[in-house]
Image (cartoon, rainbow, N blue to C red; front, side):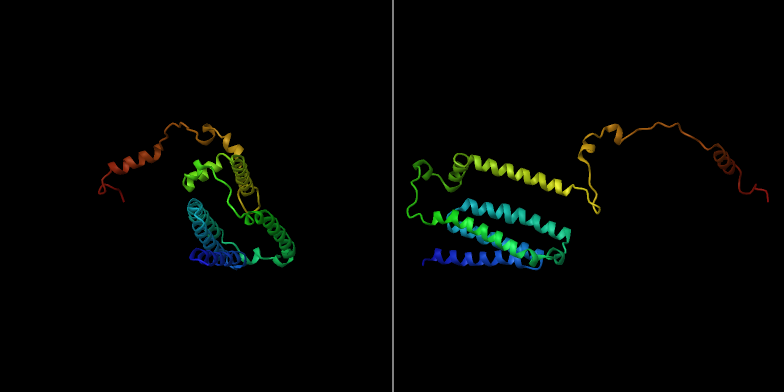
Length: 219
């Protein structure tokens, strides 16, 4: 075993441990931090596989942006972990079966790639490109439709998240976007012109008090 192989198994072991702690940590913040550790080790493994672009994208996008958002939301909402874990063992058998089915499907798909003994021939023009350019060429030529499908699914997920957030609940205040769009300037601001009014008796009393000296006041 060479150095790269030893580093691969080392970071893979840390990645598996961090992934296991993500789903078993009692604190939600600790689970998010273990997820950051898992992403960092996955990025190192991609670096060992000479996929520098994917490694940098994982660090910048997920560790630098998505996980910061996760931590912000978790700390802002102050979730009660005990209430989240209610009914865990009741749903554990079904969740275990679904997880086993997903793992079996992934194994059936990925095992074919491990049986490859010789790499497929590469176009000489693509072989001269760097990793980033070759990846962009593959995405926007061979895998263009799957990328567009993934983009549509992400847009649908964003719309679903917004719809779930804006639903009416008894403990939250929801807004109606249709009413906000129909609002006009006249409905928000109205200028009213009023004639100035003067309190004449008070003005006359103040003028008399100012004109009469203090020594001339009658007892």
